[in-house]
Image 1 (cartoon, rainbow, N blue to C red):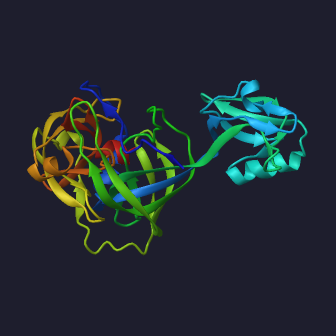
Image 2 (cartoon, rainbow, N blue to C red; image 1 turned 180 degrees about the horizontal axis):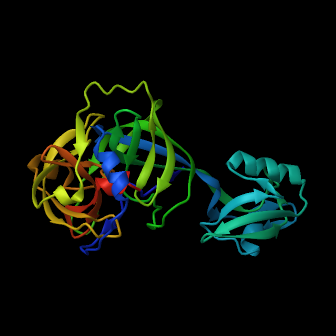
Length: 336
């Protein structure tokens, strides 16, 4: 399974701006109560096909073959279909190869957002007796991030505060996302020049929500009705116009499954940023700095609360200073 880098993207210090959502959307959002998030969630996401993660040779009775490499397939290509049949899983791929009986097949490949058809002749592996085209593939993407808010009446949630990205910080199109409770079992501390990260354990028997959409402002869906909110705080939403430079708090989970509150300082408020960076924040909480070094991967989506109101979520860390980072305004998440 592929490990996603959607905990959050890592940026050096640079400032930009964005503003989403109409007045009607913001007014409607402000009239409702929300549960404060802060819990770490594990996301299991279908890649929407079979992603090539490696090219290999096939040893046949008549010698060594490299079918996929010979027709120009590359690592990162997504196999979407074989002979017109949709490929979603590794099992789908294997079934289609066996069905071919060694006859030439037409594969639909997606690369850099563009699709193309390519013909490949499968080769029978002399050791396993199975037909192969010389690719190593995976069909599932996984990662952890933080839930930002849950709407009290509908249980709709928002998380992350930014797009889902791969190891190269490229946005991904995904399907069939699942959301599980995640227990944080360790932390790799952040340091100057290198982002830290939370190490989490998926509790696969405890699905907490269903994800329904992935946008540039985060991953969204609906919490399960059986989730226990008895210890969750409720809060109102504040627009960016009410945010001020000064003290605030974030809610994050850096151990186990229970969110804790940590002190930060808002250093800059910018309502016009177009890259989900409406705040520049600095961690001032000595305990958080001691445990994590500041902001680490996995904390993206951590809610930012100021003057008792939810104003945004953590999205990025500064690579040259892990105590500093960016945040998105909550109205930009809700008014997506």
